[in-house]
Amino acid sequence: MQRNILVVLFLVCTMSLYAQKETYEQPKLVVGIVVDQMRYDYIPRFWNRYGEGGFKRLVTEGFNCKNNQYNYAPTKTGPGHASIYTGTTPATHGIIGNDWYDKVTKTTVYCAQDDSVQPVGTTSMSHKMSPMRLIATTMTDQLKLATQGRGKVIGVSLKDRGAILPAGHAADYAFWFQGKDEGAWITSSFYTNELPKWVAKFNKSKAAEVYKKPWNTLYNINTYVESGTDDNDFEGKFTGEERPVFPHELKKLWLLNKGFDIIKATPYGNSLTADFAIEAIKNEEMGADDITDFLAVSFSSTDYVGHKFGVNSIEVEDTYLRLDKDLERILNFLDAQVGKGNYTVFLTADHAAVYPPSYLQSRNIPAGYIDNKAIKEKLTTFLTDKYGTAKVIENASNNQLFLNMEELTKLNLDVTQVENEIAAELRTYETIAQVYTGTEMRTNNYTQGIPSRLQKGYNHTRSGNVLIVFDPAFISYSTTGSTHGSAYRYDTHVPLLLYGFGIKPGKTYEQTEITDLAPTICALLGISFPDGAIGNPIDKALN
Image 1 (tube, rainbow, N blue to C red):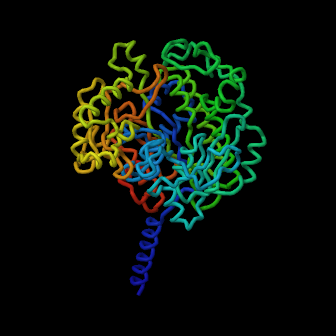
Image 2 (cartoon, rainbow, N blue to C red; image 1 turned 90 degrees about the horizontal axis):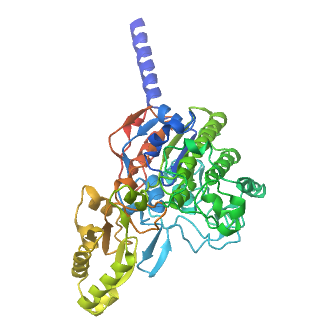
Image 3 (tube, rainbow, N blue to C red; image 1 turned 180 degrees about the vertical axis):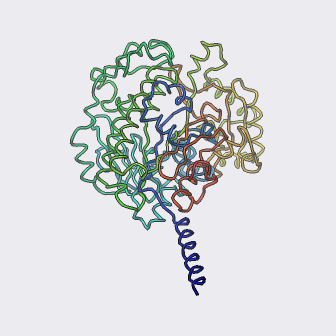
């Protein structure tokens, strides 16, 4: 009898331990951080200059994916944010660019454009925005579904697309910044018909006005040895400046640079974003209970600064040193507000960037600028000679050509044949490295290299008929500053850091892909993956 009682007790204890093991615990808050235009090498490049509480804390106490890649092209802001949060690529989620040619309406559309909604918090009618063009669910949508809507989801970014696409379709709010003469955080009627009281209060406090001040280097400018000289010909400058050098006198340049818009192209835009994100957590009581909330934050100023001044500029270095301090401020706030160990953070980027070709040329590295006018003239001559008209092409955008189907029908031309003939012609042009057709994208199964990345970025409904790949480091841009968008590694290699609840400290050099992030976070939360997800959880990072 006593033995039977002992056996029963043993079984009860074993079952209890097993049940405890299988209990799904979740963080109180997930904070997703996207740093717009951040190359992976900005972590090691500026490592010795970072403090202990920002990037270094995420790396040393978290999990570092050192070979994290975008697995598609084009590497732009809209597609990047959509891919991070859907776990899939433009082929499925449909955000094939920041803007693209709509073959049905025969107009150019914007990735967050929605003419059925109204701006809220601004007098500008240019902010009719929503996620309606995103045709896949996000990890934030899945959290909403899993919690019956009780998990709060908010997106915050200077850029509308940087707030809207990560927040997904079911979000409570997405807030973005209206510059010019307003300097206010706004939203659209997709989310609410009036700003929450705390947002209106934040705007009335003139918090953005604090940053109407000179931008000088955080430290002695002579210590910025990880960057080029301050005064050079590879950097752009603010309107009204004679040279692209410190200090940048924002007050003097204010009216010539559209007022509050100038803050976006300084590190102060990131600080303002951090200010607002902290207010969102406090006022919306995010992470205050056991139902997981999700704050999606995108730091856009890094992109504005990179475009204007370029990868090798002191301005970029100073922006990251200041962002490091803003990250530390956010992490310290989360420790105090939510509790260390109660939240999960990830940090990644929507794309990286190329060094200014003018700078690369000065170092005898192959690079250059695309002569779009010469290509257009040569192609127009070919089309006219071949088909009797250049109207067989309806639109050229995002390195893609869209054929005019009505014109092809009128001329009794076969679509695939015309695609192949145009592609063959373009392959003979200087600076063009590869050309693929829409038919090839739809019928072939590319598994590696640039064609594979193009195919993952090719949406059957929205993409064009001919896809052009230019030579490495050849860009269609000004001779100053940096840009992005290609399938090359300088645009695809971005950081991925995971930190906090459910994350094992460590690192990996194995290739991870941007589409792995959403499944990883969903696995950590114990919720369904986004409906179009093609990635896999990074199991080495998970407890």
